[in-house]
Each structure stands twice: as C-alpha cells, then as structure tokens.
Image (cartoon, rainbow, N blue to C red; front, side):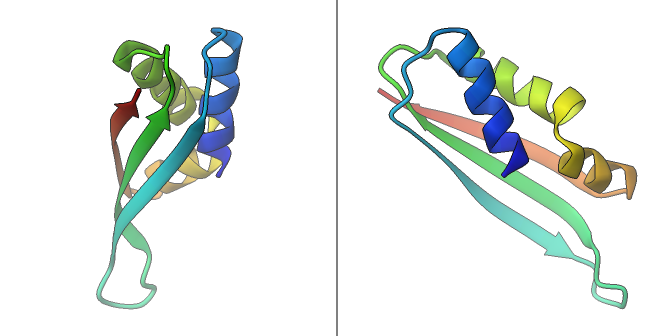
Length: 89
C-alpha cells in the first residue's frame, strides 16, 4: 500500500488525472521455516485518460528505489521484487 500511495502522489504532482489504480500481487515463499517471501511481482494497473507508460514507470521506479520502506525491507532481505504496468485509457 505504501508503493500505491507513492505512485499516486508522484502522478498527481505531474498533474495526471487518475480514475483508478490497482496493484495485483503475485508472490513466492520459502518452503521451509521461516517461510519468508522470496519473490514478489507487483502489477500496477492505472486507469487514466492522460498518463503515459513513461509517467507510470517512472513513478513506480521512484517508489521502489527511493520511497517505499516495505519494498526496501523486502529487497534487503534478499527477496526479488519486480513489477509490470498497464494503463487503461
């Protein structure tokens, strides 16, 4: 949820109109205890009449590399965090 807030904030600063933003999450966990997350994939789905792929990708990149504490915690623990994106006009 912190990454979603980051992305919304960044896009709003770019004055993009946002109708909806969803994140679908797919994750894998270790098979033995402690059963920590080993891979997490985030699919960002933005509904916006004026945002472009580059706008959304940059907002996600900033969130994942600079602002999102949860993502940083996953990555520092060795979890592979990836993302993809889609824009619905």
